[in-house]
Image (cartoon, rainbow, N blue to C red; front, side, top):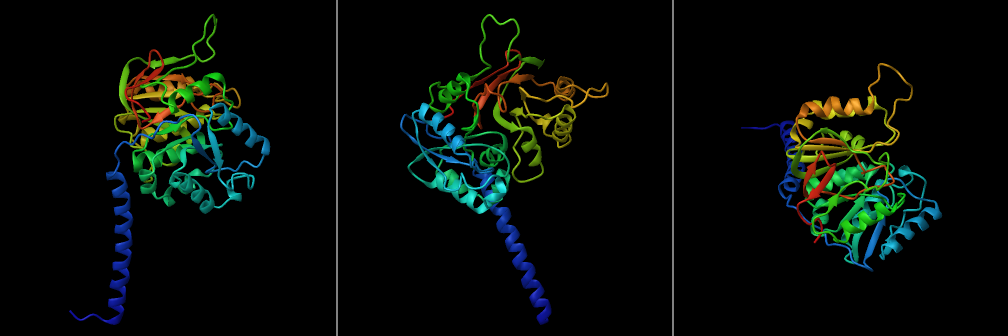
Length: 350
């Protein structure tokens, strides 16, 4: 077959495009197929941890002091990323800066764990630029919540590393939050039990559990901030929901917005894949104005969870609540919807 110069150039260009597409597909396929569960090493007294801000910066020196206070009480040493105090939001630092500082913490052999100082906004911008093989080769504790959910999802999917959805260093840190964090990250419990604070002599519980559908279910724990989870649906960076225990949380979202996001998960076919659901205590999730046409949050949750016929409950202390449990993403556990507990069936750190 004789090809004209024009035909030859067209075929060459198409071949280059197809090669690039195949390389991209192979990279994602490799990351997916390489997913074997990895447990990070537990923390020990005097370990060095890296402090990062993958999204919003923290310019206030008093906030830096507050973060150091928590680390000192944990009897850890710390190293802050270079640009953490520069600027006032995620836009004031480039994606490249934030990415480079996060990856340096993973590759630094002295760093034993990585703590996010805050959430905010912007972490998802890093997802398609991370070399996940570096994380797989340098597994270590990674801690944060809220906007950090995006990183939990991607790291879980492409490396199999167990990460920790728990307080950032600027969280309130009640005794419950502090003790639960230390218990989980320092491996003080071989198989951690996650439950709300136990109260004595209380007429009305500060953190009530409302069972939506009774029962127990076993599966791999996934979850985090509902808004972030929904924003990644339909991308290569969404969770694998099959046979999972789904833990959701959010804050200051009106019931109709929670409804919209849960409907998104339902229409995407994700809710009917999970084995159990816990929805975290949702602060300020009330209608902005009373209306007989608006569902309450409880009605919204019942509407979506009851028909699933899997154990589900509301009120677990995760996410945006002062009393905040640290959850191991990617580890196997049993969810009990009657008692409102999550019992891990394996150690979550080595």
